[in-house]
Length: 191
Image (cartoon, rainbow, N blue to C red; front, top):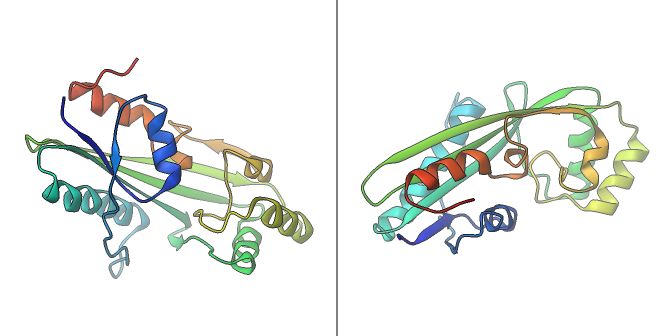
C-alpha cells in the first residue's frame, strides 16, 4: 500500500484523519494562501486544497496525498482565523443571528495521477448572541486558530441555532465521509 500523507500543519485535520485508523505522515505544504482578486470563497478553497496536495505530491510522488482547506464566509466575504481575542469577539458579534457558510475543500492525489476533489458546504446559523456570552466563550475556549472563531466539537456548539451539512466532520476541517470514499477507491481498508 502507498504511503499516506496529509499535506497540512493543522492539528485538527490530523486528529480527524486518525479516526480512520490508517498510518499517515503530515507535511506542511507552506503555500501562499492569499486569495486572488475577485476569487469566490468556494474557488479559493478549491484552489488551496489542490495546491497543498500538489506541492507535497511533487516531493513524494509515490504517496497518496491529501490536501484540504477551509474558508468561512459571511456572504461573499472571507472571515479568517481571528488570532486575537478582540478579533474573535468582533467576528462572533458579526455572526450573531446570521448564517455563515463554511467551504471545506478536499483533494486526494494518487501516484498514478488520479485526482479526487470535493467541496463541502456547511451552513451554520448562529443564535442571537450577547457581547457577554461572546466574551465568556472566547475566554473559555480560546478559538483563536479556528476559522469563524469557534470550535464546533467543543463549547462552540452552544452558539448555534442549527448546522446543515452532508458531513459533520467537514466543519471541523476535514470531510471524512468523502475522504474515506476516495481512500477506499485507492485500496485503503477503512471499515
